[in-house]
Length: 308
Image (tube, rainbow, N blue to C red; front, side):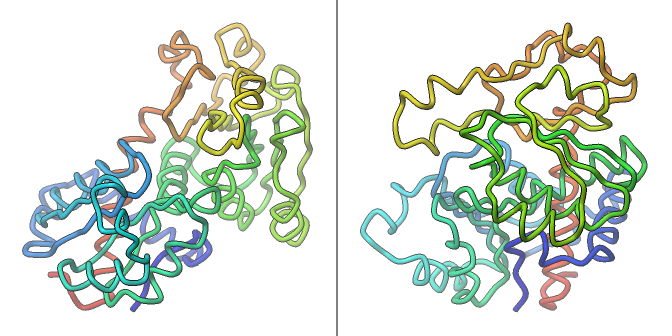
């Protein structure tokens, strides 16, 4: 039974196929409106979520299927001490596919080892968020026309940002990609990502603490919030939370076709004045996320022999 725990579980060819399916859904949604008729998606979210959970649920409904939802750990048997493994076994009895978010790194892997239906990792702690990366890749495909020969700026919380880690893993497989890592010293990209992904694949990168200095060279600027929930003490969070704020003034030096992205939610790291800039793509990302999740659900259910 195949599950998707990390973006590297998908080949470049499979990612391209998913993007092509998503684009076809955008062109002709009615063609897919009964593709998952009678099938059930369980969304198990042990950590707060708005976009990802509702995106999965909207995706399944628009494929003609049904949704079973657990929206917090306190409303599930996890609050009674049930293990992730047992939860996965139990929910497999009710659903055809499971999307799971959990605060602990590796929880989705444990679930996949014990479930009898496909598991989609909807975010596990600071580790990985493959479907957000698929949404990011669909956005880049539609806005930039491809993935090669791009300079990608990643700004904010690069230490705990699972969306950043997943995007680096994905984009590092394409030729001509360069990363500019913009963060405070305390929130730099983990050394294992630099060693196991960037250096291993000879992907050029530079590190800086200066967003304004980095902006002129970027084709993509991927902003992230400083995540309060990942900090062990509030003092550190308060000190770092406003490290970078993107506003129209900083964008004056940016390329005319810069693609501004953000996995959301934002706090104040992107000024609302930027929303009116035609280069702002973060709300498009939200919509594209639904379409790519539709494509992924279809792929996994078809592979499992459970889709029309």
